[in-house]
Length: 358
Image 1 (cartoon, rainbow, N blue to C red):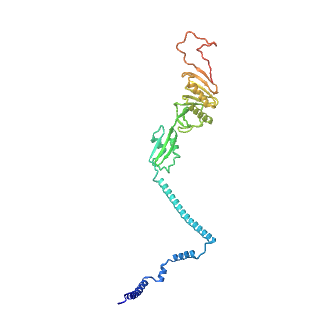
Image 2: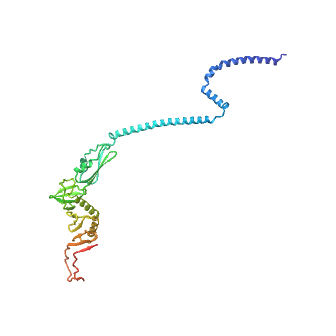
């Protein structure tokens, strides 16, 4: 009987050798050469691996000097990185600035060519002229560019041509409107000189020159420095007279006293006014003019002087206003048969010639 165990063992050994040789050959054929294997390995990674292994196994613990040097190197690297970022950011700022400048230049060019062109002119305020007359006097065409338009000389042109205006204001309302605001001249006073009446406004501008009388107070004793024309401004030979007229007019307007007929300024220390052609008022000087006007208003409007009474008021001293009748009111149509006698011997129907009001 054959020894099967022995046969199997020898066969196995022989097959193992053949198989082993074959496998080794196949493996040798498939595996690259050592030079190829060296090429595939990254030198940097191999160096890093070598350093890592040396550091872990062979190098001694890090010294303080080396640690300080590494810290300084790290800080230097961080500074360099920050500087690079700063330079990069600075270049961005320059870019933004150049872009903004370019945008401003483009907007400026468009503003004076295409944008902000006027398409209408608006007139506001009261005057004696139509909107067309005011626009014509201004010299505007309604197509001007608001950015390039210079409004400095426009009010003067309008005032020179339209004599019954005291004030003109020109505004640019973006994006496309020009607004002209006017104020009508209001007669303040008139004076007679050289056979003609000169009517002046509150700003001293001559509104008209003719023989008719205007509905405003008449200044007596005023002498102009030179001949004037309608629309011009007038001044007196004595500058004090212009000051007197301005202050008296302001005080009258403040006290709201209407119907002042005349003001005589021939003597600046003895000014005389007339109210409603029947009340003669002696002001004296211009001192305390507001207080004097307050007293006049109190006497005229609060029943101290009748509507038909002709009297003279002396307010040169505001603390003691004196009233003296010029003419009395017409007598009554019927009178009693007997007259009562007062204790001082005067009849009750008689009035004293002088009345003092504190």
